[in-house]
Image (cartoon, rainbow, N blue to C red):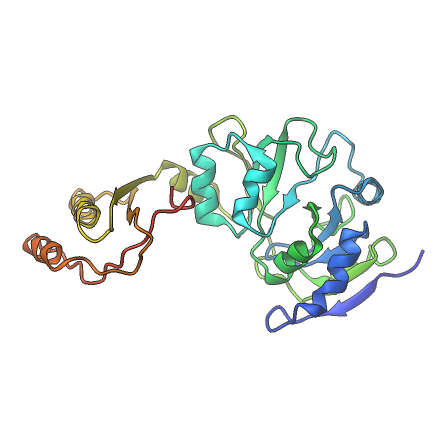
Length: 288
């Protein structure tokens, strides 16, 4: 068994070409150790049966216990999952990219037979190297922690490679990971959201985001009516000592960056509200 090729890369300031070899090996069915913000992981192409078999042997993982997918863009969650509840979108908006794994209903799309159970774990790591490797590979990537069963998940490259040098094909040494704790796992596949494993994000943080409400006001240009509604409701919430309501405004016109009209700024000023900092934005799918 040959040893893995190791390349040392700075977490910031790297060039795309430095990660291309790792991405190509991953796409072709190789196993690659990559950093994330939590711990080091073993990246594998979920659509390659041989790669998945090798990964299962390393992790001693049975067929009925799937690995979570790692994606490089928030919108890709809808390619792999369906029936995503509002609670999950709130968590995605707050914590992705970041140390949050969501269990959702699977589309069985692009991930081989990994998620035949009807659910799928998905995470978007907050690490530029990981995101770039995943994106360049063009593959459906799973990435469990780079440790043998019974050993702690490694936050340092030396701990990640010492037992796996002969088991993987390529490894990226980016030093110590930023957080050093595994992701928090939340099951949102049934419509509600329940913490299965507390990791870098605490349970109370998850619950606070789910509990919060978002109000979106929409008008034509986002310079008059929706602006007044947003600022007045924000004032009402502040006066009521409510910190669980986020208030947004947007317009349906394609032109963004407009200031609030002078009339609106004057009316709001009468209520003790300064709207001089407002800039219009166009409503998007992401905002909705």
